[in-house]
Image (cartoon, rainbow, N blue to C red):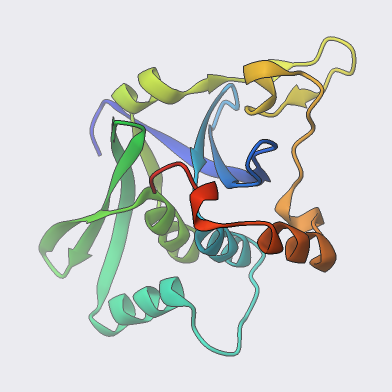
Length: 186
């Protein structure tokens, strides 16, 4: 861990109101800074299932990665969101295999999905926070925390928590999506 890293945790998953794209929200321990990262639906599902401790009949990709690491007696020391280039976040998964340390390049969404499965720290470089952090804002009328996506253009949007989306809404979201809807890089 670098002195320029800040530990964060997954505060939740929300949907972007403009594109219905999933966003993972990372917060610091003080709760005053958050980092929104737009991710894919598969990764959002992987993160949500790990956060909710959902046991699936067969392992998903991130469960498979966990199983492989276990078989190799490797440990995830931490994941680190290390950079932001051209609107693309960069991450590493830091591993320990016996006395050997390795760092593996990864998409932040995959690294986060793995970190929540193995309870590894999620570190974010200060330089990334300087570029992309969102200060938390409290709505003066309601006293509630406004979601990051609400601060860009409107304070009326209330983010939908993935846990509260019913099956019909998911079907509607998925039915209306096309590859061009994902105008971001994971």
